[in-house]
Image 1 (tube, rainbow, N blue to C red):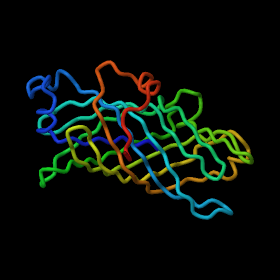
Image 2: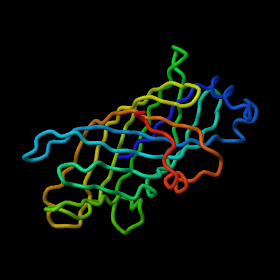
Image 3: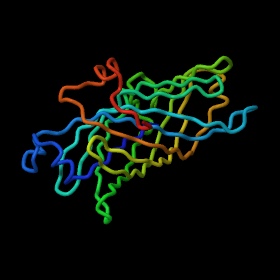
Amino acid sequence: MLTALFTVAAASALSWFPAFNAASFEDYPLLWAGHQISYGTKNIPFRGEVVTRMDSLVLAHVKMDGSKLIISQTACAVRFDEVAGIRVHMDASALPRTRMSFALQPDGETFLAKSVVSWAEQDIDGDGNPGMTIGVEAAVCAGDLYVANRSRTRAEGHFDPKYFRGNAKVKVEQQVLGSKGGCLGVVARDTQEVVSGPFAYVNVPAGTTCETLIRSGWPVDAES
């Protein structure tokens, strides 16, 4: 499902923010708003193969740890495009907080991260059902799915004076733990798929929250 991505060039970042030098960087984590787009494909009965899209909006704190940057971030929203008349939604605030490490590659320009986000049968959204609850709205088959997830991400990107931008590829393994709605219980299946797409992050003021950003308009677009 949700994958969390961030890249940064350490030396450039430290010089870009005059309020933070190498000695004080760890004491004042930087706050960033991020946007990731994940494109995939699914086979829909009577429709054939269709393109899917998921948009993830996150807030990330960043700090230096030696030669690495440690990213700790929280999901603000996860939005799924409607596909073949089916709408999907979830409680993004219940997704696990993620912590990742990004390393500069030998070319001196590219930053690379490999990360895993997963949960099993534990009730991570606290609604009394196993795993994460995914709401499904459709004219014929609607209800809730309870799913476990394991997402493995490989992301790489570059720094420029205003943004961190790059691309990510994610292998998503999803296991159906149960359902509410008779139709979903029949048609839902465990899945494995690969999705990919661009991501971008931009610095935001300290004290910024998911709610304030969503109300005012998200400050970064991964495709712009």
